[in-house]
Image (cartoon, rainbow, N blue to C red; front, side, top):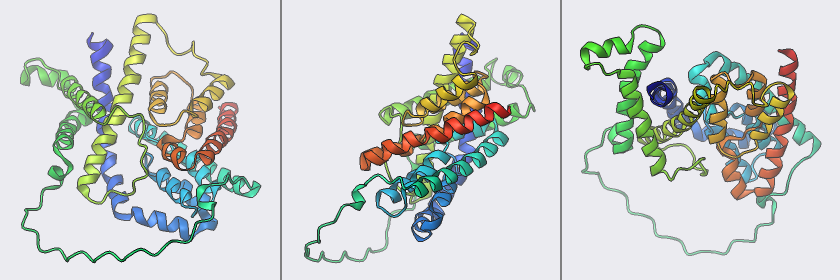
Length: 367
C-alpha cells in the first residue's frame, strides 16, 4: 500500500509541489512588480507583437499567455501575436517539468519561443485574422452624469497585517507545510540524508518525507475542492496587487499542479504494479506518438497536459511526443479567449497543431 499509493501521493508534493513553490514566489513578485509593463509593451510595439507575445510566456504558468489574450481581445495586437503566445506557452505543465528537468525545460522553452514567434509572423503574413468583437463598430457613447469624487481617505488605524496573514489562513498553512517539505525534500534530492533513517530516532519510526508529503497533498486536495475542482483558470485577471495576493495565488497554483501530478503518479503506479504496463503499449512512440501528443494538446486547460507531462517524467513516452503536446497545448489561456472571442479561439487552437506536428516530427527524425 505504501509504495503503491502513499509514496506516489507524497512524491507529488515533495518532488514537484515544493520545487514549484520555490519558483512561484519570484515569478509572482516579478508579475506584481512589472506585469503592467508587459501589457503596455505589446500595445506600443505592434510590429514586434508575435515575438514579444512569445517572450511573455517564458515564465512558467499561464500568466503571460493570458495577458496576451486580454490584449488581443481588446484589439490591441494581431491574431498572429495571440497564436504566437499559445504556441510558445507551456502552461502549468512547465512547473512540473522545471522541477524535475530544469535544463530540458529551458531548452524546450527556447524552442517553443522561436516556434511561436515564427508561427505568429507566418499567420500575420498569410493574413489569417478572424473577425473579433473589437473590430465591430462601436456606437457613440451617451453622456453620463459625472460621479462625485470620493473623499480622500483618512489615515488607517488598523495595524498592517503580515504578508503571510494577508494571504489568508489556508494559504498561510500551505506555505508552512511547504517550508517543512523543503526542509526535508531538498536534502533528500541532493542525497544529503536518508529521511527514513532520520525519522527512526527522532519521530518514532515515522518517515518525515512520507508524512509531510501526504499532509501537503491532502492540503492541496483541500484547495482544489475549495476552488470548485476547476481544471483551468478561466479569468483574465491581471497582475496581483500585493505580495499577499502573490502568496494566495501561488498556493492555489501549487495545489492545482500537485493534485494533477498526484493523479498522474498514482495512475501510473497502479498501471505498472497491477498490470505490468510500462508505456510501450500506448501509441506514444514514433509518428503516432507525435500525432497523439498534438491532438491531446487540443484539450483546453492544463490538467490533462500536466498528467501527460507526468507520464513523460515516469518514462512513458519519448521526447518527440512531449514536444508535440507542449507546442499544441494552449494552457489555461484558451479558456477566457473562448468566452470573449470564440471564433478566434477555435481557429487558434487548430492552428497550433500545425507547428506541433512539424516540430514533433522533426525532433523524431533527428533523435
